[in-house]
Image (tube, rainbow, N blue to C red; front, side, top):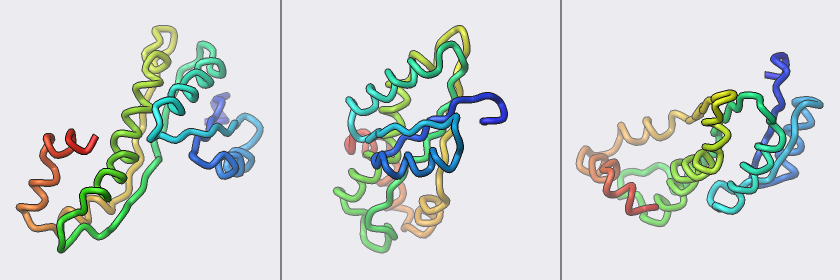
Length: 146
């Protein structure tokens, strides 16, 4: 990305960790603090990104992820673990994406989204009992966790 004259932004809950990675990536990389579980934090990042990007295209790589109480079997996935995990992995990505939508949909330069995931979810889901897997993955259950 830097070879394509892109400005890079590393956003993380821990600003020192984000800065460490930004320093490794070079002079065209900046560090921002962002807690994807906090709407105000996501809005602040979106405002900063808008100032930095100008009229250039925006690409967002979602890489935030947590995993509590794994593996999810044989007992049912505890509700609090599900709430925290999905709050970051699913709703956090959604929250940051929504905050960045005006920049991503800018007619001068449309943006792109990339979602990074591990294989842990698929591996654990495949080992769950069918009934538990279906109960966990119904849209009503996911909405209830928000």
